Image 1 (cartoon, rainbow, N blue to C red):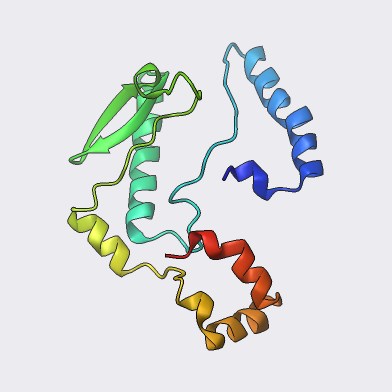
Image 2: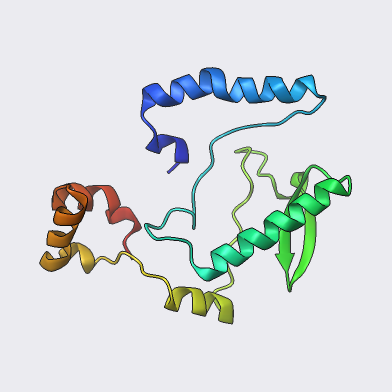
Length: 157
């Protein structure tokens, strides 16, 4: 699924018509260029708030990316491996057929992954069959259980 698919079509057409081109235009005026596009969402969308690992990684990557840019770097994806920053040129990670960054999987054997899974509340397939859970969904969210199931069953583990 693409993030842009979550937004109403009429809203997205306005953004694509003005927003993307406006940002690109403003950056070109100051001698910068940027490519803006939709992307597939992975861990960002799992029907749960970010866990501690997500928050720590976001903070660290953001800091390192800004430091990289301030040091004159560009055209790279910032990653962390073993607590150290690595700038990987986009040409090395771009899938030339799709134009998207190649998918890199998470090492599920690490302690940090195990901890993040233990502390994360996730929607499960058994939740979608649990009348008590579905009643709570209807009461708290104000939507029919069937609509909730239709919309979120693809993320249930």
